[in-house]
Image (cartoon, rainbow, N blue to C red; front, side):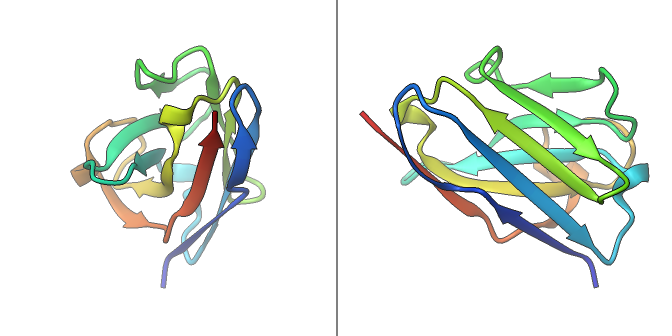
Length: 125
């Protein structure tokens, strides 16, 4: 059974930083793209960042977070990270980790077949 466990969420002031982690079990993620999505209250879930299987320079970000967030992976630890800097109140959401169906990055939810339970990120103004 594949499980993705997010951690690292919390409450932070605007301008601050958080680092989210996503530890995978039941699947060796090194062959798959990984992604982060988020869902704010009253809004649909949206793509945040993605990284392909190699994780070298093949990353993709939503425009709203580009330049502030970075995504990385440690395949030896079967873990993906989302470093979030210069956080804004509009970044407040539940953040979800997802494992792709293939090695290629995608911003579309249907390209991901396993999802974590989510971790809450709250940015105060």
